[in-house]
Structures are given as structure tokens and as C-alpha cells.
Length: 66
Image (cartoon, rainbow, N blue to C red):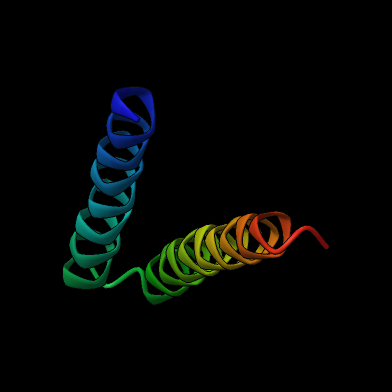
């Protein structure tokens, strides 16, 4: 459980770094880069949510003996 929490903290830091980089790029007028960074950030977050859903569903099904 501790390793999972550490991985989540690392992911949060990484996503926050991408958000900050997108903000900086936007301020510098580089909208293409800012948009690409935002897209990457959302894709990473979406992938995380999908993995969480799949893992939780598998655990629930395994608990039912399915």
C-alpha cells in the first residue's frame, strides 16, 4: 500500500509539473506547446482513472468468486 501511495504522489507531482509547464508556455505565447502539454496531462490522468477503474472492478469480481 505504501508503494502505491508513493507512486500516486509521484504521478501527482509529474502531472502538476506538466500543468505548470503548460501555464509557462501559454504566458510565453507558445499556445501550441501549451495545448500539447494540456492534452498530455489529461491523457495521463485519464489513463490513471481507467487503470483504477479496471483494477477496482477486477478486485470486486475476484471477491465475488467470479
